[in-house]
Amino acid sequence: MENKKRKIVESVPNYSEGTDGEKVQKIVDEIKNTPNTRIVDVQYDSDYNRAVITFVGTPEAVLAANISAAKKAIELIDMNKHKGQHPRIGAVDVVPFVPAQNVSIEECIDLSIKFAEAMAKEGVPVYLYEESARSLERKNIDNIRKGEYEGLKEAIKTDPTRKPDYGPSELHPTAGATITGARYPLISFNVNLGTKDVKIAKKVAKAIHLKSGGLVNIKAMGTVIHGKDYVQVGISNINYKKTPIYRQLELVKIEAARYGVPVIGTELIGVMPLDAVLNSLEYYLQLEKPEKLKQEHLLENYFDF
Image 1 (cartoon, rainbow, N blue to C red):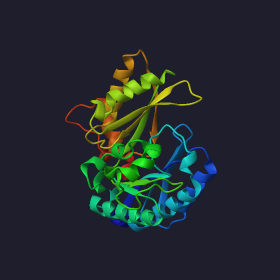
Image 2: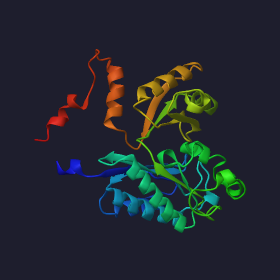
Image 3: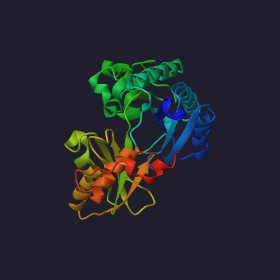
């Protein structure tokens, strides 16, 4: 019972390194060696050239771990040599703070500001997004990443609207810039299409992306997966309660079918809340209403006695 009273924050920092496993491990070690934290998941790949680390811990520990890991990433990653399919503006591309247990979104906003202040001291410009954003425009991370690392190099110096929230108005020589903020749980759930034609993946992604008339809370991009016989629609779901996973998957199936292309698999990046799983499982099981699949229906809930 004591653990259920503990304050827990989740963080899912994204680093612009997906080809060198040793570098990724050094960044992971900074988090692992911070007391009161626990690594949940580590994923990286060369196509996106990106590492995504999911971990949890007490608020103070998560902040400390992110600062240590970011400093190591700044030391190891040179953005002048970086190329990848995923939009990015820096070595430490984005560091979100997510309320997980007994923590408010306001507390997570405070953590993101402290992280931003620490990065500014390292000479890295920082942009606040989502719930920490100081303008409506910056709430959406896509607006901050406009032009990516290469485009931001000059824009940060000349365009007043691209001025960072913290730090200098010029990119760090090798680490670029960083985005941080408090947000609610995000699910990265990618869908593989049975074709090598990336143009189809891009068309499907555009059809489901919020900005181009798709689903609310969904951001998507079509990508090539080298060495595979399929392409991928990479999807970020920023509110699974309002836009459930099954809905995004079914819409991908519908749009892909227009081109005679099947869905051949999916990929979960990191972790997802149990509620998101139950929500979609309920849909596919077609349970009778008003019956709903809840955590109370899981046998494992009754093992702790």
